[in-house]
Image (tube, rainbow, N blue to C red; front, side, top):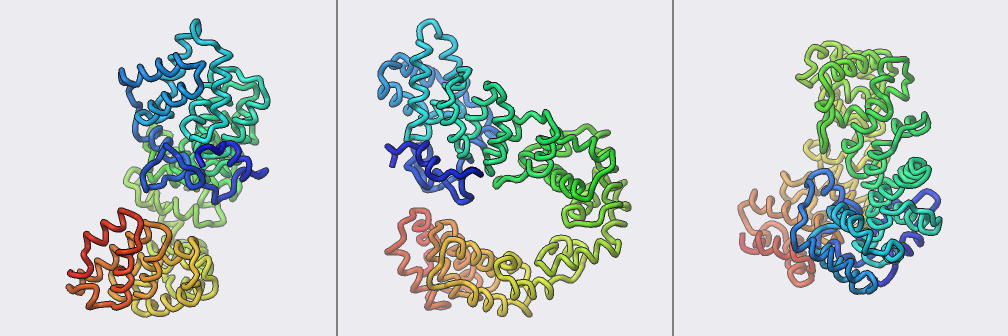
Length: 482
């Protein structure tokens, strides 16, 4: 698969709205970026490098490889092989400045046309790191060729390349418009990077940022501070707001209060933080009510930094409109976090919802399993609603929400755990083996003595399992001789 152009793979899968939700580049290609059995989401390794690992220093050996590579500029295979050797030690995202600095410092000896020609050649590669190299090099040029621009726009649809494509677009005429269009078509790490570099030059962009800027498949906290600034949330809170805007702002401020992967509220000065909290509570007092708003009010009430606002928050949370709203939300299986916090009964309603709408209600299984009155009934619902003899990936994901909740209850749904051991996802199999080990520990006996079904299933896995980590887990637990 390495010889197949990544650009062509993306073109084959793209639509007017971007790539399908289930598109995964790493699962479609043999990538030198990740040789381990662990598969990261597209763009995840670069994202973590940018946000959490800091700058990688260039070693003398790395510098020598860059110099050697560009001495082979007229030898396409030679420069490519040398750059692959570099990228085996230094990820492309960490090498951007070093590669670009070398080219800029050697403009008298390096042919600009040759560099550009090689860069465009790289864009059509079947190797992830070489495509990134192409994007690193095209960034050095004020790109005029619409065909090359289209290649970059297409590659940008994959979260694996979005950041590199955004860097290119920053140099284009109307580049901010290009980034805005791309931001709306990517939904993972790509959206995080695009939002960070999007300039909110007009109301359309600001409104989109407030509405969708934090909506990514990674973690909303990465983009929340950017959206806070770029959507002018401080200014909005000080004026007249619609209920919809209040909901949207609550969705942005929530991750900022959580102080997740990047600094949130703590990144604001004290006066600004106090102002936005006071103004948000004032807006909430006039709001018709929503889970997003009530969640944030509950968070503020428990935040010691704003303890002077606790009584105002509690008044909102204890109001009839709030409690009635949360109780109504239970009819759709929502709001259980607030119900637990505010001691509002919820189990009867979410159980009724689970029976009525399994596809939406299965995530609440863990809340019901701990209750003796519901446990067996919940397990029966899962047996009835899942195709246990013909499971698909999404079915295993649903079942995982149940099996992960029965650790404290030996032999509860043992047949369902046996099904989970056949999941195509090694994480599921490892987690299930952990649960079985817990059961053996609680019973203080071997697996053979507590479950013929699970004993036979694990015994068969010894000869059929292909994942090394799962094999190690079976040996570590030694289920046969506890």
